[in-house]
Length: 301
Image 1 (cartoon, rainbow, N blue to C red):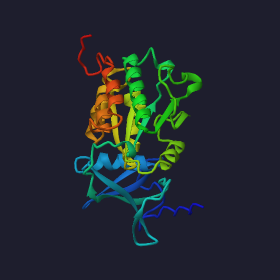
Image 2 (spheres, rainbow, N blue to C red):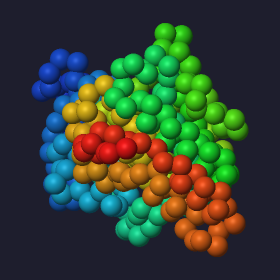
Image 3 (cartoon, rainbow, N blue to C red):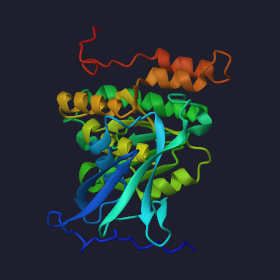
Image 4 (cartoon, rainbow, N blue to C red):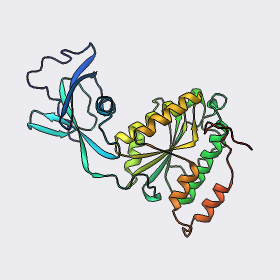
């Protein structure tokens, strides 16, 4: 049985919730290293919004190649404690971002035993609107074939399938771990978190689908906030606008998310010509997938 979450403590000398802050917001003191900066967040803000606020306040000082933990000052204990699961800001409080001592020396490494593939909203109704949708379908199918060959779990979401249709027929979902309808833009749903918890040792997510600047971006930021390394497959993600796609990928790369390609991912996962599945993966990447325009340059066929 889950333990009850502790109440959010008030800062000493504080007034009521929202004192000194715009209506509908709560004052929070954000501490990092030797700094402490007050800011207001919406009432009910959770982990992801706190992380975003830390990045906006201290982004130029935060090393995104390290893992962090968010802690809350608890009057009961007179010290900081790890942020409770499901925490939401309800009154004036003080939080801090603490870098862990161990740096991510494995940054960028992919191994089948610690990797999960996320296929995001590759649905029929998006076909006419998304730039180079046929290309990303081909590359997405290649990635799912590679996942089956290497025994990598796959999680698939569909955005409001009642209105936007199911995953396109070209994408073979045979053997995927989970296919989940959603209305939230991010793929990080309770059911997805439960599925990840069932897979021991997950360290990395390979993410692809649509749209780059909405569902892909929000999924990636939530996963990174949970300490998971994210690899976005550039030749398997797109948007209705190439400008939105370009700026989303640039923003994500600046936050430490790895922007890569399908071939790089598959070859990194086998890592060695003598890998027992290398020939099967090699046959996959020999099938050329045209990505005209996705790199920003026209590719000659």
